[in-house]
Amino acid sequence: MSNDDAILIAKNVTKYFGGLVALDNVSIEVKKYSLTLLIGPNGAGKTTLINVCTGVLKPEKGIIIFDGKDITGYPPHKVYSLGFTRTFQIPQPFKSLTVLENVLAAIRSRGENPLEALRRSSWIRNEYENIEKAFRILKIVGLDRYWDWEAYKLGAGQLKMLEIARSLAAGAKLLALDEPIGGTDPSYANSIFENIRRIKLDAKISFLVIEHRIDIALKYADYVYVMDRGRVIAEGTPSEVLKNPKVAEVYLG
Figure (tube, rainbow, N blue to C red):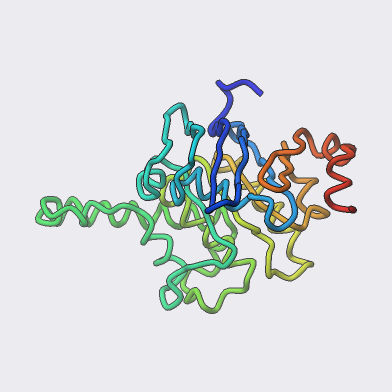
């Protein structure tokens, strides 16, 4: 995988928690406009790696390059502002707000600027533009029919799509998803990944996805990294990973 094609490069990332080595010289790349899957058993270090890459945790050593920029040690809000966003296993929308309002909350408004706020004609026009943008995003994620629903009325899978919509509204270039089909109806799981693949193409963004349901997720991935005990033990296309004896050993024992 050429570095020129990578939106994210993590090189030799190491992280300790006390005497525990959570990440041991981990290196991964996420290609632009790809769906890269991160799999492995519980405790493998997957979420810790995402936390380091997004600035929630600082590595003991190693570097993180995002979109050609060294972001090692950047705080989460700065990483977010550059276009590297994430979702969590449990969606965290503003439950009492509507679907549309949730998306609008993620879009920067000129009215938030004290100087712009005095020029009403400027920020009012901007608000209309933001509403149009929010509706375009809701259409991309398949929630445009539910724009006036309060978020608490959505199902688990729809809440995952709302999280993606908010990331798109914030200008995401790379979106890290932590178990996007966790807690959802199994019959809806495939459609979530189908939506993610479609969003990847329509919105021209990249995805780094942690998922335990590899029986469902693998067929949608462009590239896969397998972690175990803080290390990357295998990588490649889904078919290459499935044939790797180390992967079989980790999952089957």
